[in-house]
Amino acid sequence: MTHVVTESCIRCKYTDCVDVCPVDCFREGPNFLTIDPDECIDCAVCIPECPVSAIFAEEDLPKDQLHMTALNAELALLPGWKSITKRKDALPDAEEWKDRTGKLSELIR
View 1: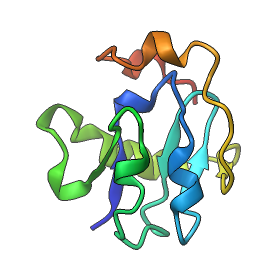
View 2: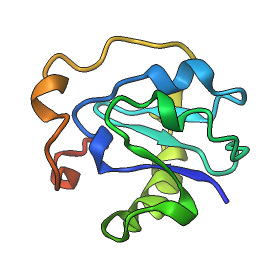
View 3: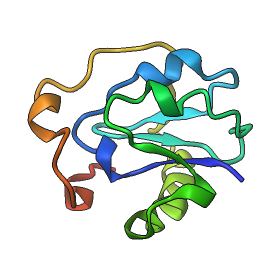
View 4: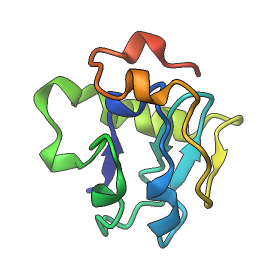
């Protein structure tokens, strides 16, 4: 099993999670973080670090977020999505987006 970043991260991109990841499995896109399932060791230390509760163990994903497992794997392989290992500032309008749902259409690949 792996961990999965859900839609809650879109347009927020808080990076608290990358500071605690022991294997550097996070990849950064323009407005979203993803977890590379081939790198994730299922340690779960990232889950409590996310201020928007966007990270779940794959087996604990809410039903409306099941599609995010395949999307995380797909995005992790994109050439422009590089490993991120140090915390950065969240996106400028993250506070406005953090509680919104249904943000998949806002994802920039």
